[in-house]
Image 1 (tube, rainbow, N blue to C red):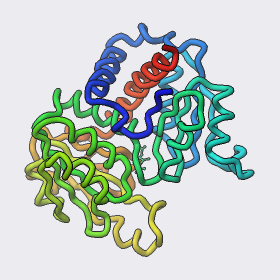
Image 2 (cartoon, rainbow, N blue to C red):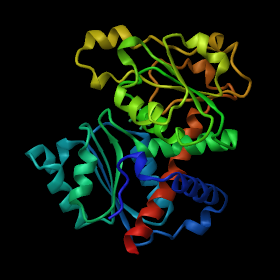
Image 3 (cartoon, rainbow, N blue to C red):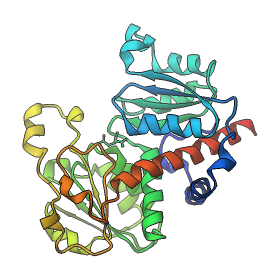
Length: 306
Ligand code: NCD
């Protein structure tokens, strides 16, 4: 049974195929309005979410399907001590596909190993978040028209930011991409991500603490929130949370066609006065997430039937 746990589960051809389907959905939404008639998506979210869960649910409704939903462990049998494995087996009896978010790294893989229907990882702890990457890729594609030869800056919490880990992997497959990793010393990109992508493929990257110094060279600036819930103590969080705040002033040296991204939620990292700047793309990412999740649900359900 084909699931999506990590972005590496999708080949580069498949990423391009999903972008193609999403673009077709954008142009011809009516064509897809009954594609998942009679099918059910179960959204199992054991961590807070607004965009990811609602975009999965909106995606399924726009495909003509239905949604079953568990939000927060407190209202499901997880609160009684049920394992992820048993939950996955149970939900397989009622739904056709699962989207699951869980605070533990590896939980989505455990679910996939026990489910008899496709499982989509909607974020597993500080590990990865492949469907945010799909939203990010469609946004870059619609803004830039290609992925090759871009200089991409990632700024903020590169240690716990799972969206960063997945997007670096996806972008590392395209040629000529350069990475600028901007973070405080304590929140640097984990070495496993560096070893499995940047170092393995000999990709050019620099690490810096200086956002302003990096900005002029960037085609994409991907801001992130400091992930409070993954910190071991509040003191460190409070010290690091406002390290980077993007303001109009800091953008003075930026390229005219810079694409400013953020997976959201934003706390303080981007001043709201940037929202009306044509380079701000973070609310476009929100919408693109729905189209890519539609394309993904279609693909996995089709493969499950074959
Ligand atoms: C991200 C996540 O959950 O990892 N949010 C999202 O899905 N759009 C980013 C974050 O929570 O900071």
